[in-house]
Amino acid sequence: FADFPSNTTYSYLGENEYEQEYNEGIYVGYRYFDSFDKKPRYPFGYGLSYTDFSMTCKKISQKGRCFEVDVVVKNTGNTAGKEVVELYATVPFGEEGAEKKRLVAFGKTKKLKPKQEEKISLTFSADALAKYHSLDATFVLEEGEYLLRCGNSSADTAIVGRLLLEKEIIPEQCVNICPGGEKVKEITPPKREEEQIPEDVIVVEIDAGKIPTIEHEYEKLPVYDKKMSDKIKRLVESLTNEELARLVCGGGTSNENLPVNAMGASGTTTPDLYESKKIPNVILSDGPAGLNLTMHVVELPDGSLKAGLTEENLAAYKRYLFGIAGMGLKRKMAKPEDGIMHYQFATAWPCSQLLAQSFDVDLMEKIGDGVGKEMEEYGVTIWLAPGMNIHRNPLCGRTFEYYSEDPYVSGKMAAAVVKGVQKHKGKGMSIKHFAANNCELNRNESSSNVSERALREIYLKGFEIAVKESSPMTVMASYNMVNHVYATNNYDLLVKVLRNEWGFDGLVMSDWDSMKADRSDCMKPQTSDVLKAHSAQCDLVMPGREDQIEALTKALDVDLVSRDDVKRSAGRILKMISENTIIKY
Image (cartoon, rainbow, N blue to C red):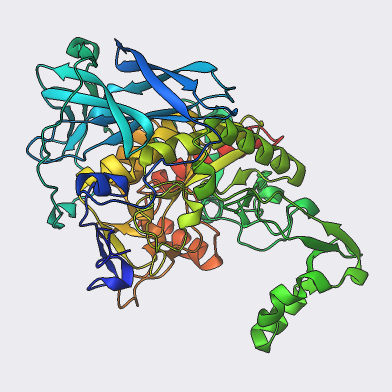
């Protein structure tokens, strides 16, 4: 643990547990170990097989904005097996420094018999080679030499290619976001030693003309986007302030009005507008390793539902069943003999940290497909997953929920799972926790203080890949602050980055109970502000409470909150409901 760069600053180990200083900057995980000459017991990407392999790079070519690398993998052993091919890049060190290597692509062979070989074609964008310059808010390919390294772990690679760039180019022009991170004092790596490059490596001169600059528009988004139906617009316009507030706040965590096979889900959109406006609710289920539902449900003679209090789960509830709170919990539960017992068994999949070690995106998509089938069976609309924050430090309480220390692996794995789930019509995912949620202790109160370069190159990059490659139905904003602005109130993250730069047009929701309705008596920041959520375009406040609805209604009545901002969020919620229920708007 002492070898991690955040070993003295992480969480309660630092001077102020509410101020999480990301002093390591971009040097996270293997980027740090490789750049600062630390030798981990098991290098990033390391894995065992049943046999041995050779890798031979046959071709490197530029195809427009992208580069393609062909690698022939041969089973040189006596047993059948699979191999992972990992492609790393070393970018120019420049004035601001750079990690020794970064993963830009990977692939996995099929099962190869002894002496059998397979060609793996790895593709990556020129953007994967860029460094972010915060001074002028640009992603830059600096003049110089880019080395490509191929192998089966970050510590076991061979230089297979040299990409040469004669003149600096700017593949992407952005605007600065999340100010304040420039105050963080980051570590700097030692200068690199000159490497011996084999004479037979493939050399490619980068054609800058094929990499035009991407420029984004940062104009204020309209109340209704072009995909919004006229029926949705009319319905939104017909809502009173109280109805608007009720729609943009969730239906709570109670199990009323849910079908038997969705009881125990983490929440719903509001059920309160069905009678008056014919707006149905949809069901959201948590679960980092599959759907999280109540295992036993008792359907009482009057048709109501209660969680089942059985011998099987009595031990699990035992410590909750004493005192006043326990009496309340007991009243919400029923014994099997009180009615008809229903059983809900969802698959417990391996956790994300383990799944990512497969380096197998096809497998991940199959798992997503499996979860999608269970969502159909149980009536769940949105699976609150995958968690894809970065393994910044092993002490994070939810490391098992997250994929990797590497943003590229995180993004590719998440995108594959999302594709698998969303093959099922009306089923979607909520990638989370956006963004820089890398510590669970004091998550509602702490600020992740991070430079813009590290934020963009490390902590946002995986989300960007997932959004662009899989179009998740929803994104969940995190509890924490980023440079002292809560994620759910953060216009820079939720609009400038997520929508303006990445083109996301889905729904953004808050994490559960991350907002206060009344912050006037707060001695220190404890949760984000529900009255600032919709101006930052956090559309759905979850799980939703009456005090939040009341506070938002009053603010709308006196124009303290813009009705247009809330209407924009309401339209997105109705669009999501319309696409996922039999009621169409």
